[in-house]
Image 1 (cartoon, rainbow, N blue to C red):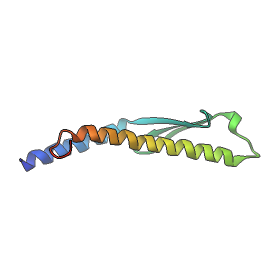
Image 2: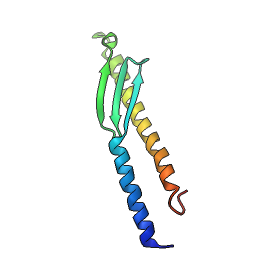
Image 3: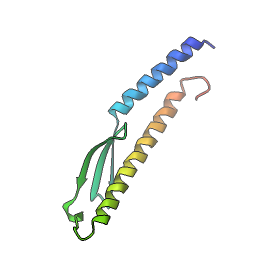
Image 4: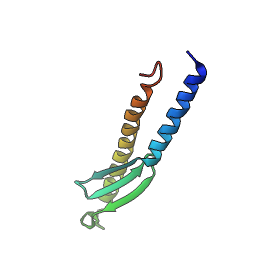
Length: 97
């Protein structure tokens, strides 16, 4: 096994994963689409959309819960997307496929 070749493959995988993280945008929603979010592969919130019907001054807790649910779902989907990509990339290295 050529260690230099293995290290080069690992570096290329890391660079590819970084590019995919940079390009990845995940969308998620909660409350039947009343709250929608977009999140980057780096788990930065890019956009938040709230349907005016869900804004109830008498019940801010409901809106807070919906925002949390949408953000957490987006983060889970980012993790899931990266795991599937990592598995696909790992198939190219001995011992990772």
